[in-house]
Picture 1 (cartoon, one colour):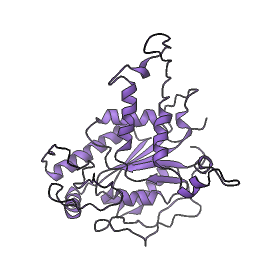
Picture 2 (cartoon, one colour):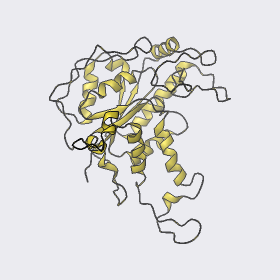
Picture 3 (cartoon, helix red, strand yellow):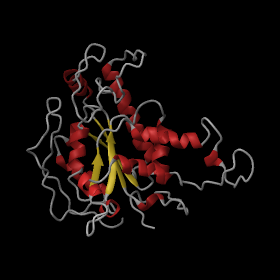
Length: 309
């Protein structure tokens, strides 16, 4: 089978699933760290389709794994034999078999354009499957660092279910500037919501930039210093990068790449693209939620991604 992504990826193919048949790219970031600009930049690369915020779908998908591992029931994924009798009749599920349905969740959340889907059964038109066959798919999220799972668990989920993926971890070391941006853009969620970004689902806005929902669920949020909270998020993502390893993840800092496009060009080279050079940087969400329709990175026409590493 085809393999793509980190050279040291561990793929255990089975009759039910070949985890490395699809390449994935993820952006893990914090709020007001330039993640939407980064998303737009990477979508200029050929054969890349990344989608935006998704209510932490990766964490939600991980609950399918933990459920089968016996968090709230029998540990079906740990059963390495065929059980032929009793209420728990179940054949053995081979290692990494769950990777394919987990990956399909991401594909479902990031489908091809509607016109492609509508022409799926039209003669002489490519099917949705054919359209996406060689694409690098993925998502960006500012919620992966939520403390509902520790760093090691979060890293293990990506390594086991997206073994041939690359992960760009984006922080903003200018914590003072990030805190001011959050305070300027958002109001206090207990006073009045002011979020207007169409990337955030209505009614569950992230109005303090912490990557968590601020919808009133009857519980008061911790009264932490915003700068302390940002530092905790940065520490989490930095440790996650280390846990994933340099083949799979790379840490970048918005305070550096916003001033020097070379930083992003180095990331593009690390991803495996050839003859690709950004010449400018887009600035999405300037002044809050303004869109940048004027800047184009001007990627070279020779830019391409090889069939394999």
